[in-house]
Image (tube, rainbow, N blue to C red; front, side, top):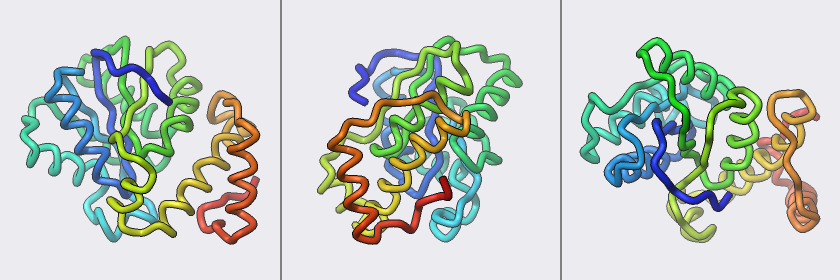
Length: 198
């Protein structure tokens, strides 16, 4: 989304199959962007084999390996979708006496806009910025090692931006004509594994 990185109260790492979320959260913590990280996520069909103990648990372990102290990490391990990631994290923070005014959502690069739209719906009063590990598309695909998986996930995420807004799960977002045309081309070429019923 091109948000300017700036200090916030809490970094929230959104669970997924992508360990770079935890890597980037640790990097932002080391740069003093926030004093606290919350990793959030249970498991999904796309992550259970890679992170059998849960996305948030594995993210925490990775951040510890990267030098983030345990005292700077909270985990929320029940969320199974982005709205739950945000709402359950908010509840966890409140239970720990934290009432942040600003957060940085860290996600996969192609999830930023959907994460932002969801947060604006679920937690409208929070000041939110989004970030992800800064890689080109080619470098990101290479880091995951599975272009089919990345393209299917990207197509599914793009569809969810509109479908979730229609269902009231997120605020509407503009979709440029070029993005819509690219989405339609990819769907017509069979990248449909992550699509949901509209």
